Image (cartoon, rainbow, N blue to C red; front, side, top):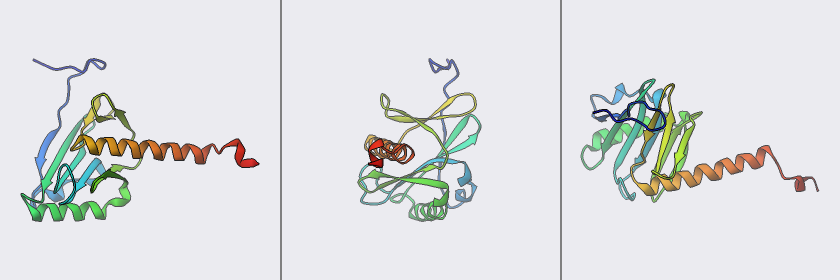
Length: 162
């Protein structure tokens, strides 16, 4: 049995999931990372977790995950790698201690019905789920406010001339 996306009539592509270890951390190509979350200990939701969505090839995503409670060494090393790559990302607050990074230049479709983001690849849409609904809602609010601020910069009010 195959599942199909109603609008695209293409098979649903579920991401491959990989647990981050000291041995495979260097195999993550941060140039292919689309979305990343860090939730340090004390954050609400995915406490102590890191969630990464990276392009595997043109039509699939790979999720990489680790958690400080399970493997502190991998969590610390992954967090350090992300911090060294911040120039690749736009940083958003996920609220309550959560941090979200979206690759610069990436357009994510916001789907408030299903509380997810969609990344449009060359031939299909790939679903990106935040670790918890609250992170998704907070990031959407921040993205929306930043977009509105950019519009204000590009198109200043006529009243600004008076």
